[in-house]
Image (cartoon, rainbow, N blue to C red; front, side, top):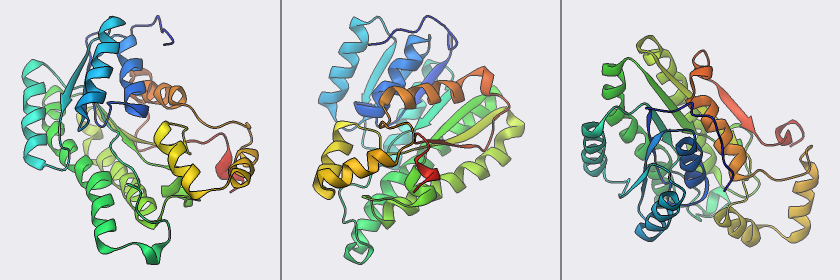
Length: 261
């Protein structure tokens, strides 16, 4: 685990959804390494236990809570519990995915659309609705939504439902940025390309040949795929005091791929 000596988030509290593994865990550890007390949610209790144990061994303040984030009542109760322990300064709506629904639009069922929208949009809306009153009361907040290259430019392997859901998160970000900026709360979107987590690697292996994957790699000007650390660094910036004048932004993190595809 890479170490960061700065303590930008000393005294700050963060909530990161779907953070038992992958991108979310990387974000949580990065903020905790810089001093934040971080709560992570996930439905995978085993992954949460592993993350919490790793954090404990590293001396990081990471608290894990198993949660079904499609349950609105559970979200409200969990946020209330966190708020009893102190302020919620940073919210990262990391939950999302294509959920292995079909790639082709005409192969996607009504249920495929409902599932992806429920996870990628509705769960984030519910979490944000529960957290925002606490941020308004404190006069401070950082909300970071996970968009995607797919939401801005389409996708080579995730379908229309996923692309539409991520585009919706960008629009949601813009509205929150306007409405809550006067309360000292910023809201921004991260738009990664295909970050090579195990889940994404499995999906790419199912939907693209090795030759196709190599062509994609060669289309990225920096000639590499993104990493969890790349995204965690961007989260740390948006969550920091240095980003206090950045509001309603969508940050592309794709190595320049969007310029050529």
